[in-house]
Image 1 (cartoon, rainbow, N blue to C red):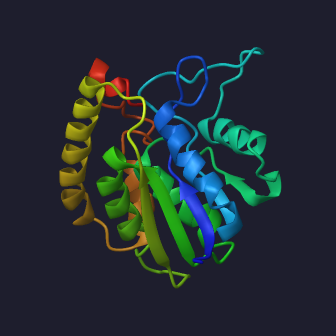
Image 2: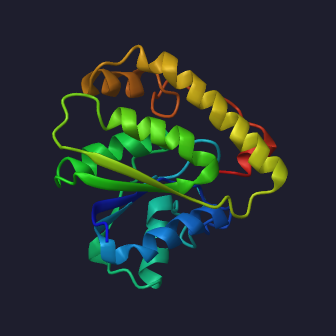
Length: 212
C-alpha cells in the first residue's frame, strides 16, 4: 500500500447555492477513499475570480475549501486530518499556496494531487513546476490521480478543455520569467490578474463559466 504525507485536492468551484459541483465531489470521494493512506488531506481554494462567492444565511461568503472540508467531515474524515487554505483563486495559486502553507512548513515530501481529467494536464504541469522552484526545502515525490468529468454538459466540457489548453500553452511564456520562488512571488502579485489589485480577470464565456 502506498502511503502519502498529504493528498492535495485543487479547487473546482462552487455552485450558485454554495454546494459542491459533481466534478469536485468526485475528487473528494477519491480523497476520502484514501484516508487510511495519508497523514493529511489538503483542500485548496478560497473560490474563483470568475464569479462572486455564494453567501451563507448570515450573508458571509462561503469559501470553497471550507465547503469541501464540511463534505469530508460529514463523510467520516476527522477534522484534524484536514488542512484548508482560502488564499488561492486559481490552479496556479492552489500549487503555490499549498507549497508555502502546507508541504514545506509540515515537511510533507510524498504528495498525491487529485483532480478531474479535464483539469489534470495543466494541474500536473503547474505542480511539477512550482514545487521544484528553488530553494526547495523538501525532497518532493509528486504523484497524480484523475477523476471523471462528472456533471459537465458536453458544451461546458469542450469549452473548459479548450480554455485549459490555452492556459497550458501560456505557461511556457510565464516560466521564462521565473527562476526561483522569489521571482514567482513577485510575478503572482505583480502580474497575475487574480492577485494583482490593479487588474481584473479576463472575461470568460457562459459555457466556460459552467465549469467553475
